[in-house]
Image (cartoon, rainbow, N blue to C red):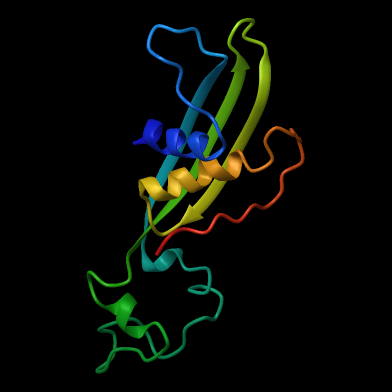
Length: 145
């Protein structure tokens, strides 16, 4: 999945794969880190900062507490969500000497994790190619619906 995502982004940037047995002009190194978080209702920053109101927690009184978060936090399986923190890295090296030509990283966090997201991240890493800069900046890559 990772190699396919990088291949699609490299193809969009104008790169083509070297024929089998031929020496490549450019060597490509890729890497990725995907961290999955299964957050519970207590991970909400408003939980302890006045983002809820009402009396007590579920079951302490005759009625469940009332507030904007009453149902997701009160029910057993509701209120949990999966969150992904991702980072991809890309290094282009000269095929003959191995000297670095271009290096970039892209970072994203969202509630979905699929190969289309990784492709967009590699495309974002190649957005400034062939210029290289060390200052982090935002790049928007729209995904197809």
